[in-house]
Image (tube, rainbow, N blue to C red; front, top):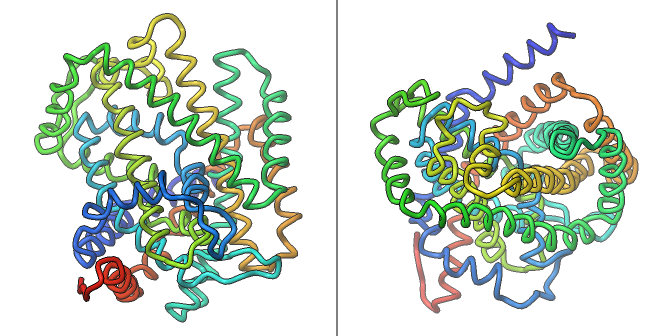
Length: 451
């Protein structure tokens, strides 16, 4: 068993190596160029569509906002807390700058995924929308075998990264902070997960629309209080982030120092892990949105990367820097908690971080439940949905009570492999994305626009 675990751990290192990261960032750069930085020029409109525009009565299962919240439920996770701490503790403050770059380019990728998800979605036997990379790889690119590969990798990854690993994080944190028995956590999580996911996407959408904003606001509010208390340190922290991104970081305190390349590698890898742009997961949720206009939902989808990385990850990174926790020598798993303990009085900081990890991880569980079931539906049809939901909920108990390192490494490999067929689809169908965008912009402004 140890040999098999070591094999998948090594394979994960190869899958998530420099070539895939270059392909992910390169695709974002290519799409940014072809779309003429649409993620910047249309960001205001995208935020309006997300938070202000009334609910749509167009074809689909859930609103623009609910579709985004489902995607954010799966995206905002422990990576926003522990992942950022990992990047900065190894790559220095400059890693945060490269997370910003990855997010800026990733917004173009997420936009393209949204366009294709809505354009090539279908209505399944249950009368619900089904879409995502597997459908645009088959119906758009004409390569069904790539769609099958994506769906296979996605359905397996959901049980690991989206389920058991997250349940283990919840149980571990509640045990450490409140001494709650992991078995009790597992029972509660299993019941809560089952109640939500057995109701399908409409139920997941309603729960996510309430839970995601609350958990994000509480966590970000905690960060803002700390940044206010350390307001005099914020300008120097921002300067340090920008300076160290191009000069590396000298050794200080418990920090061993980092080169520019380490800062870039850790910033890019943690950024991709955090916002999932290019991974192909978010467009599965985008396809369920009530809309007849692919570009409208695509704009809403790209705000997910903005919220996840530019807002939430930035808050975490700045808190780590202004409090000095990033070079304290503390364990990476407790680094953000240490920063909050320094920045907030009493035990409130630790409670906020525990709250963040628990709710971020749980939201990932229910978000990935939908991703996994749609991948499995593509492979086996709607008859597989109910058994899948029961199995998915049951495995939450397993994840909460048993640490499955082999499952983590295997699912990590599957998660990385999802990106490859999806990126092939994005590059191959980039002309479709541009054509749809030209049509959309022309309709908005009443004149011909060419990107």
